[in-house]
Length: 151
Ligand code: HEM
Image (tube, rainbow, N blue to C red; front, side):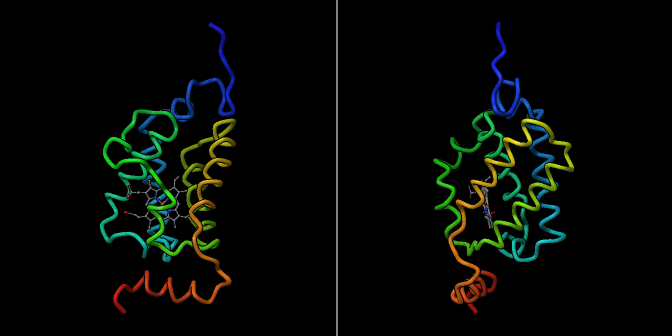
């Protein structure tokens, strides 16, 4: 059978090109470890115990890359922008999120066509989550309320 070349290479799905679920779980662990260590504004948006956040992002990425549907049957239609509306996400937050994700991809040796494909698609998704403007004075106040609910 002829192989069809996709933007991510010869594999049937980006999921396969990446090396499947163990690689995706490892990327997610490294991503959240980087947030824990180096991205305090993003870390403060997450629950103290971030194990569920890790599981949800892993489940989503497995499904989104063409692997088994681990996310939608459990959590419903992704509607990612809507799910991110409770958080103040300005351009600088999207940039920081992307920096951590790119470094996690580096740490897991994600290279070549699948890397170029993921860099482009994940960047689009991250900018789609932006719901605040760094230059808007209201952003600082909304961020303060997000970081210190009830204050
Ligand atoms: C742009 C910067 C982003 C910020 C600041 C951000 C922040 C967050 C936060 C604070 C949560 C809640 C965590 C929790 O419920 O435990 C969350 C959930 C989630 N995020 Fe993001 N996120 C960003 C971009 C993205 C992108 C690009 C994706 C997809 C590739 C993504 C996928 C998810 C998923 C799947 C969840 C879980 C939703 C659920 O089922 O509750 N996020 N995000």
